[in-house]
Image (cartoon, rainbow, N blue to C red):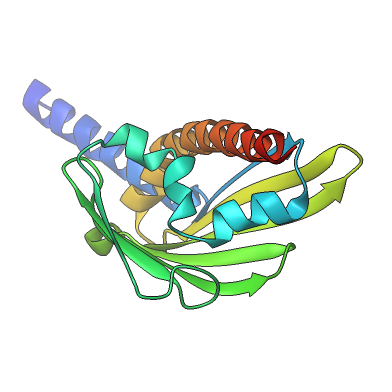
Length: 181
């Protein structure tokens, strides 16, 4: 067998292995982060449930200062939504699909050509305030490239953004409490 054929067989072999491994990666990308906030559940819940309040703590605006938000007439609770358009963030939309007052919020996210995902929030009263858990779930289907992206890229990027956003939410919530005392 010639050197060129050996190289060709080797390249095909590597490609088959890469694709096969892609199918073995999880079909869903899941990210979850939590923080404890020294503020009442109602304070923290309001900052998440009211989409216009999100601008005070959301990590996304820091990632793309050009992003423009357009809000629906309803900005709070089930049915509230907004869309965005920015240079880095591109276009997309978020809609609150479920909300249990001071307990949980579920948001459908449409990233346009990048697909759809779900965000959820859980709020739990603690001795010192509120434990907030922010979760992300995205279905990668049978696409091995999306599975690689989810496992290797999205998880790190989203996790970092969630950590930053939760730090901001903690700060803003605690500042709101301090301002009312």
